[in-house]
View 1 (cartoon, rainbow, N blue to C red):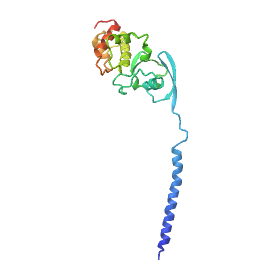
View 2 (spheres, rainbow, N blue to C red):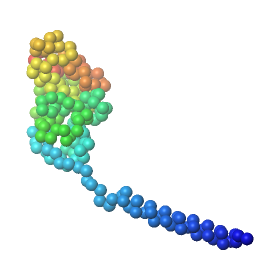
View 3 (spheres, helix red, strand yellow):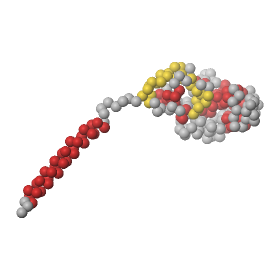
View 4 (cartoon, one colour):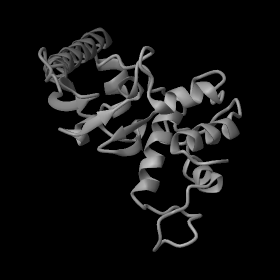
Length: 210
């Protein structure tokens, strides 16, 4: 006859040995998956921001907007939609306006970047900033830094002869009209609805009449 007691003891021994073996095999795997000293994962870049050379040690995935706000503490540029749809983060890079939330900081190594802080100061306003004050071109003010940076760049585009979708003749310099300005500023959203005043401020700076 089969000794049931001996059989049970043998089964327990086998199971205990299996568990011990499995444990001994899984412990090294856990140790390998969690290295004690992970790589830092950052890189050094140089930017020229508002006339100053700045060196940053950042994650290569950092957006230009986050580099400006979180690393350089230039918080004038706002994070609105974070999808390039509102224009609150607009800055001027190499003379052209861009949505800083849609581009990586590492892509602008050595570029000259101008934020709202670099356009003027409370003691010495940029002409566009002063015009926004005169014409009530803002209400809550959240979108204003992006609006002003975009407005400055728009006048530069028109002066350079760059056409827009509403330019009558792309072979001729675009006319400085409210319609032209509205088209070019359409990427900057103002929830307060100060659009007409913004156009008045731009025409004022350009020396044109509404």
